[in-house]
Image 1 (cartoon, rainbow, N blue to C red):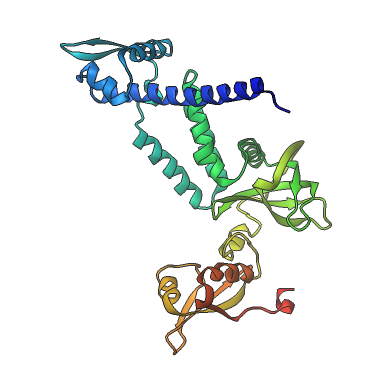
Image 2 (tube, rainbow, N blue to C red; image 1 turned 180 degrees about the vertical axis):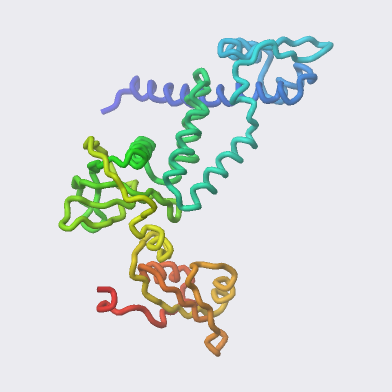
Length: 325
């Protein structure tokens, strides 16, 4: 059983944690407001912050400890006398959101290795800040940028290094079919992104002959180096780009097969508005419906996608089991 003292201690710790976040946010806002309008009055500033003068001077002292010093005179307003936070704090909230959106757009190109390098750069941007600014910004970055891809930062960085040095590695991986864990010996080749999830395209060495496989990064729990490095043939991507072209969602492959879906009602108008796949063909069915045909590596992904339209989507034709084999 949990004692009242232990419960009270946890409550206090939780309040203190929330207080730290609130205090850091307030300190950052003070810096922003003084930069934005140095000629405002002290009363206007404390009113905007929702704090009293006593708390303001405590915050002023905290900022001085991390290298942001300023003076206030009623006649002239605020004057910044020292600013060691300039390299990062000078970025407005809007600037930071733009950078985050830029990372997301960069990732949408499908180049996961480039995205991994950009994420490392984003974390380094906060590295030169003093505490508690550094920790707060890294927490936000991991939550809103790195975390949205469903992969651990340490796994992503380690794989990026293996790709850059062509290192053979072992990964502890959870298989989707059985959901058990096993070690796989692989040569990483590409990291790519589909539908906000990161995948690894790699050659497996624990099969005879070696096979090209796709691994989802969120299922990789551990990576071990082998010290061995691979020399890949120049200007050769092992068919990866061609396989990517055949993907409708996450599944890539060299043997695309056609599937046709009939859309009716509102769904037919919605499907016409967008290019869903480079191979798509649209055809009126003569009864007010739309025949949507794509040739992709995994037709079942098209079926799953079409289910969002309910009764307005019907499978007309798809490869048989024999064709799939």
